[in-house]
Image 1 (tube, rainbow, N blue to C red):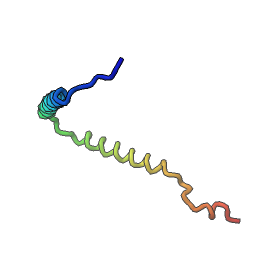
Image 2: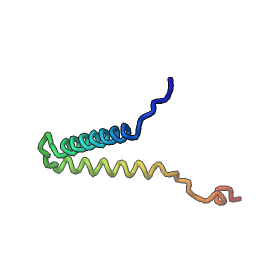
Image 3: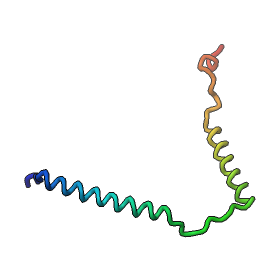
Image 4: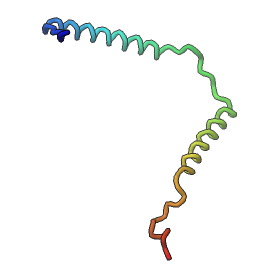
Length: 79
């Protein structure tokens, strides 16, 4: 099977078709982003507290992963 050779005019037509397809896809995506299928509800105080607690727990877990022994090696092998 040999390679398919396209003429420059065929390549130009393909490029135009791809551009048109990309514009259609972009417009459909932007339309979907604008639509909101539900009403946004206000957060209650308990939901806000839960969110803050979750963020704090994530921060604490991240800091606990840092090794406690971050001292220079010279101090570890001191006589």
